[in-house]
Length: 235
Image: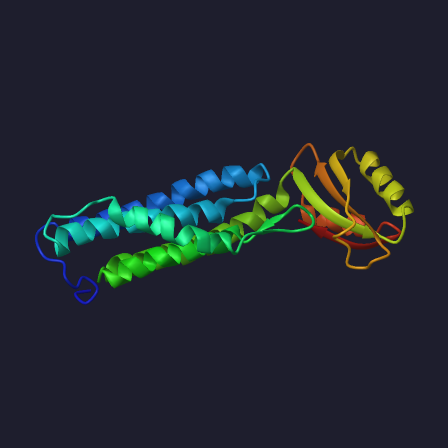
């Protein structure tokens, strides 16, 4: 443990490290709660993205506090590091974000992960090894936990968005009849010409509202049995 706390001295060391853990944990929870709420509404940035950004911002601030207290002897600007990281890494993360033909935004979690990695670099570079290890554990641990939450909760929600491809227009009639029989509301249906894996197929993006929680995998299997459907995928 002494190696991890290299450079820390004084009676406040233990309380400072405990404070770091509490702040990172709170950041993961608070960011995750905001992201989960946005994810339920179908927004591009979801639970993991918000959590990663919140953890990263917290790591920057606790590292800056560490430098001011234990490195510079109490001098320095508490906001300077945060401002430089936010302005410097933003354009790099933006390069990983793209919009697919199905109007689906991809790359936000990757952009957030890049941002958090930059914060980890600052933490390690300052010699604050405990903060770096604690932050890494938080990011990896909560990322895996939120992936599990996505599969369990989002995969059983009342809303679903599908990309469906069929050989001709007749599969659309069968699909709408199938949804009507099961009282599944079609919130939006859009024909897409550029999102087809086979050029002669008819492609549609369908947004559904089941009215209650429903297992998405079961719905996918049932719709996949409709005559004329070549491909179906939840997006």
